[in-house]
Amino acid sequence: MFGKNKAKPRPALRRVRTTAAPRPLRHRLPAAAVEEIPFHAGDGLRIGLTRIDTGQPDRPAVLLLHGHTASADMFLAPEIRNLVDVLLDNGYEPWLLDWRGSCRLPYNETGKRYTYDDVALHDIPAAVAHIRGRIGDRPLFAVAHCIGSIALSMSMAAGLVPDLAGVVSQGVFLTPKLAGRMALRMSLAGELMKSRFDHIPIDFRKVGLRSKYTPLFALASRGASCPDPTCQILHNSAWGMGVSLFVHENLTDTTHDHLADLLGPAPMWIMPHLRRMALAHTAVRWHDTDHRYRALPVNALDAADRIDTRVLLMAGTENGLWGDSQKTCHQLLTRRHPHLDVSYLEIPGYGHLDTFLGRGAALDVFGHIIDFLDKQDVG
Ligand SMILES: [Zn+2]
Image (tube, rainbow, N blue to C red; front, top):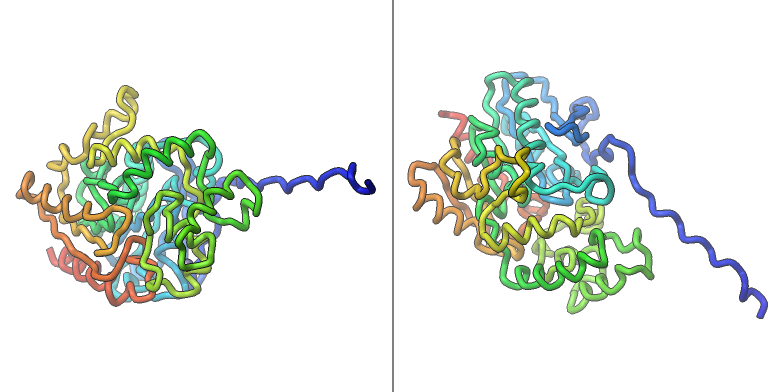
């Protein structure tokens, strides 16, 4: 038959970013105010560090740490009054780290694999040291989300980031405890997927209609009320793991349409470390025998005595990913380490990601953060 032997069109080559510089930030600040620093982690890896220049050299600095597969963009979303806006208006100097799990960087998809040990040992301490070099003896705070917060808790318990002026942790800190359904899926789906997939994509448009990922998107779409495949993967399924990352109606339409830019593919090879933490219910080191990681405690909760700053543990009441991890963390820390200054705050009606990306986050969430920072500043 005519055309039968016609060569099939070649599939387009998958584009892999090999450039070292992070993808441009999405923001609406004056370009001159955004200082992107060519920055390397302690082990030499090119990561991202951004300073928002206010022209006022006496402001306390605040380091913002995104969650895994997100990026500094999650604090700069132009369509809402974002955390950077609120920090700027309240007299602070924001610094944004894109640690190696950022979707602005290529490492989740290509390059050397890593664990959260690397983030806690190489990324966060190097960023803190760099910022300190720039700000001198001004106070330095940290606000951290999800895995960024777990990694920070490990750096703190290791004594690698001493003398922070205060820490705000969102979603999870020293006691990662996955919500029930997710924990189960992690052990089943995680093992299965590990063999078939290197990472879980979230952008259906990039992987195409017919790919090995199609069943995953189909699974995520089951029972979904929203027709957007990226939203289904994240909202209905959390990268195929069966929980929700945000309260849907808390996002603006624009944020919803940008989910595929705000969150990147999730690497499956990180799962063993995450699972080890979820089973232990604490932030634990992955590398057991490699002496290069011995600066990190085996179990960060057991080393919580080294925490030398005030901590605000924050969580949305609808957090489908980490459940009541923050509440548990607060109970454990106040019982075991009564000298620590740890407080706990629930945000009603919020899930996980929407505590930073929600349309009303400035009103419902950021005010609490500013209150906490302002109080610290007095001392
Ligand atoms: Zn949706």
